[in-house]
Length: 462
Image (cartoon, rainbow, N blue to C red):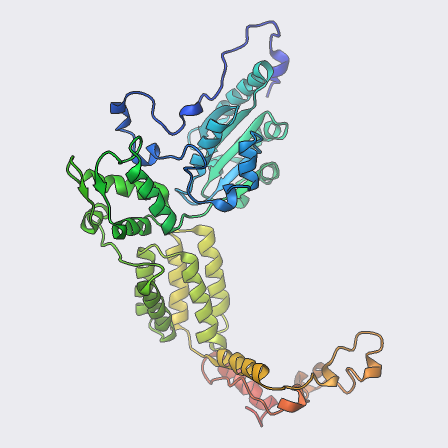
């Protein structure tokens, strides 16, 4: 690429001020008459204009946090916002555009090309030369830029000519070049909670300038919560649901019902309070179905939780617990599979995460069961907490430091690998609980192999 600075005529008239081409102080508000504004979706009209209106993401932009201080000080670093849809990535970029004294350019990686980047770089040089103003370029869906497009940005992000703000729903550590990643800060945004989405909806209902405040729309708490659960952490979807429901009311206003919501979504609204009895009852039935080796029932309760917008991390944790508590050593593969599923659902997100969860659930429900490890650790903990169990036998104590031998540490210890079958019987428990017995393996699945081995080693115990 040619160096545009070298080719500029120093005596030419400066170009038009490029300040805030993509919104300026009007970010999030449609220009023009009130009649024109009615065609703008509610979710767009209600975009927060400042931090007082912004809901959620306290870890990223809460009061006193680094990024918020940088924005308020107009010292914006290059950033990539990473998170699910509807969590505020574009909104934060537009807030920065409105709050910063910088030229602002917006691109969508789906439709933009290298020529667009070269144009922005040229105009950024002009803005810096003639107006001493930085340029912020916001690239939505930056993960869709190919390597060559990302490489074009590198020198200008590095020398400060461009402040890059990217937005992506994909993990940037997999989708963005390492060279570019090393020049930006990754800011993780998370799905909004049901309570936060309800707050967003209530603001839209009260706002007379941009929301539904002048339309006399009433929405009971039960319906607001259902909207939030259906939206699954996505503020845009929640506002779209509210707007669709309000459109079904007479022009004089009225009350939105669950039946209206079901008509809009085309499916039955799950009455599922994630902090109430229904939440715990469904989770209990889910776990008991896996424990009871009924994959059909386990899938049913999984589907109930997913349809109600349950946090997939909560579901994944229940599966991991069940893998150890109820399957255990009867099938040692259950736990690594459950852990892999827990990691995968955070990587892929919904709706694809339902497939990963279903795989883990059906495997664990179908696996042989043993709670021997669970019972064993609880029995051992009971002894430790209620008895004087004595000290660690001397022959098992650490003997790797100077003076340990004089204390008798490690003496008479027999190294099992020096003996036939890599086993040699000796006392491992403290003297006071030498006959304690905690682990009682079953003869089910893989645990039967373990049980047979232990019978040969310790016939008096197993």
